[in-house]
Length: 265
Image (cartoon, rainbow, N blue to C red):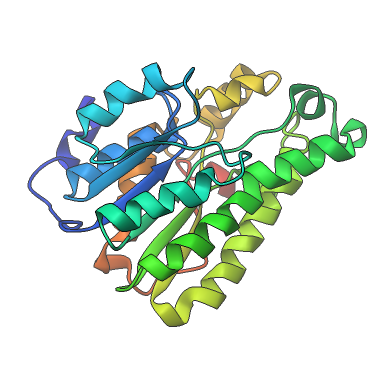
């Protein structure tokens, strides 16, 4: 933990007894990893997934570091894998309180070629992995959230404003944010809250596919009122707060964690 987060550490156990599923950790730079750490620090038990055997060596040490009781393979494009994850969660815990979805994908040629050049197949793939898989997760999670719960999906400012080179992911993330609002409406009567989380740009593996990303980082840092970029723990602590009872009447929002950059022209 770096020095700017030391004040957040301590004995706050606002998520004690809660069960969380974190999907999307690829390595120690992943936003999902910052969230998993924050959930654990506030007392939750955290189940972790990994994409495939190639990813496993990068994720398994992180799962061990937070003493994850469940470490499960999950590729949402493979039939049955998502259902298997929730079956194991039900068998182990019998309930679930938090789900964090932090996965997105578009074929490189479709992502980097501009929206007009995006193939129908590439658009559909991006929408399925980055958006519809969250809806599928919500459907499986809701029956396990017997005491209510919180669902998180990772978005980005390019969902609402044009960010050069973000291309097809802009419309896809816009669909994801709209899905969060509709799920918040449909699941609210069960005490389930749904949030789209919109971090500022971060040096993650997913971001490496965006053209001129370093320039975007620099421009965001210069524009943000707080004058600095966010890191994965900034995102994690914000999500952890949103999962506590202190935020029990907040739902359906897109929550920006970007030093205020989104308010600037």
